[in-house]
Image (cartoon, rainbow, N blue to C red):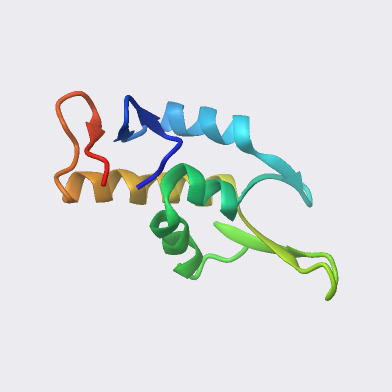
Length: 109
């Protein structure tokens, strides 16, 4: 699970308001849109949440890639909608794994 979205060592489920706040704090301009890089999403929510969004056939809507030439490579990123889907995945996984505790967190592994 995520490492940054924690309180006292436990991963947290997030509300829409909390997720929006995190996105706005962490986003950068890519093209014409505020976006969040996949590396940041992985640090915040875990690799699984990021991979889930990238595996969905929602390119341009949930995620995209910005290329800067063969020598420099490409940067994958999530849109706001994609980040909300990653947060949803994160929240549901915590719930289904039964890791959510009474204080709103989950046990770390």
